[in-house]
Image (cartoon, rainbow, N blue to C red; front, side):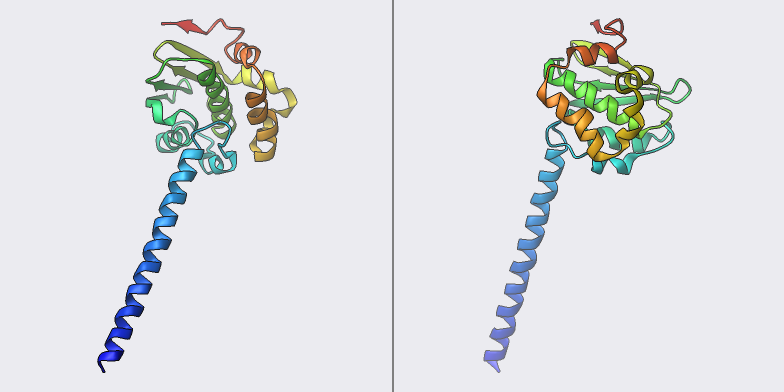
Length: 183
């Protein structure tokens, strides 16, 4: 009888250790997935498709989208003006070339996923960028509507940002630099 009790105890302990192991690995994978979303090189656009929406006014959706884009750890808040169809995203870091690439990546993703969004102002501690949908559409031309496809987004946005200087791209996005301002 005592042998059976010990056998049950051992089996229960093995099951508990197995459950702990699986849960621990799942938690590690979730953290790795979240961390990979915060970098342009490893961000998976297909995961952002969950935030596709016709309307900017869905604050929860818009906030969650920007929580899954590069620089989200440095984001201090967002403000939505549903009447003007504009979005302001505030960051607590200065702007440099890597942040400028994130401006391009994040605004492109937002315009592709939020159908009625017209302007995004991204404010850093040293500089602000005002990006308009019209400028983004001009940059991509006829390919703009195809960016909803994750493979196309990777080929036309993600890879080029990683491979070359983004100055010309950023100038077009900010209307030839006229909207780029120092604070």
